[in-house]
Image (cartoon, rainbow, N blue to C red):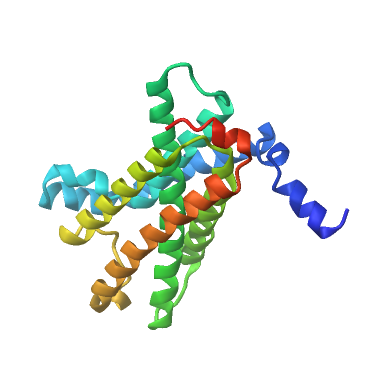
Length: 223
């Protein structure tokens, strides 16, 4: 088997949707998501104490992205075919679109922020490399699995609206993820990068879903 055929096989639906691979994903994603919320513990507490409580859902960006993607993959595994109930398909489509868009966005964002801090003098440590590997994998997995999902244009639009709203709340009310001290004076550029990255992530999710998916999956779109 040459390299091209090997890559085609390893990226195929038969491999990526194999129960062993899905079990492995759940074993990584479920505890990883839980730990992600724990990682935000300090910021969640300070937001609860110092900000209106409605801002709490906008704080833990990456673990919420991981949560949506985990639910989307689990749903696909348990119920690969669309439901006869349209509202269930609508909810499913939004969960899938949110999982893909936000995983791409925050997977790239966290990695870029760490390297930006390094460029300004930060020394990368073990936990930084853990975050880089984990978040890069988030983005890659979202791109790989997007073609298996059934979300449609409306769900993608809803995911885009939520993610832009999240950006707006983050940088209007100062509930964005804590930044390395090296970037304290670059908040404007971080915010600009964040908004642009949301737009690129929505576009990437659309390409991965509609340009790569087979015609049957496009025909089965849920919402």
